[in-house]
Image 1: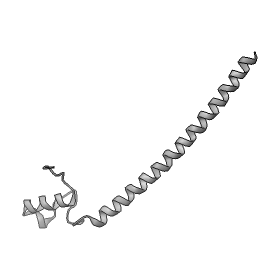
Image 2: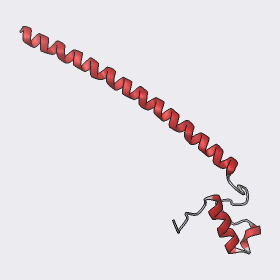
Image 3: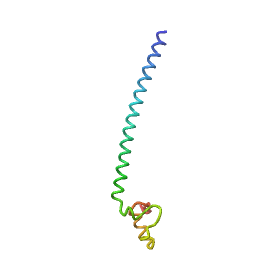
Image 4: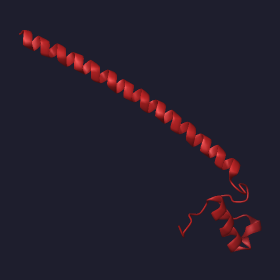
Length: 88
């Protein structure tokens, strides 16, 4: 009976230790997620600031200025990152 009681106590202690480790891991993951989210937001702000011709290249339509010159339109889209570079 003592062995069974000791085993139950050991299991309870081990369970408590696992719970504490899980909580610590969850906290670290939450902190890492917050850092990543902040980095994503910072990168988006930087891209908006640095992006060439941000109002010239809407995603939904071609600007009238560039409709007449497909090569120029392609150039500006590549420059702004709206198209993948095909020759990498």
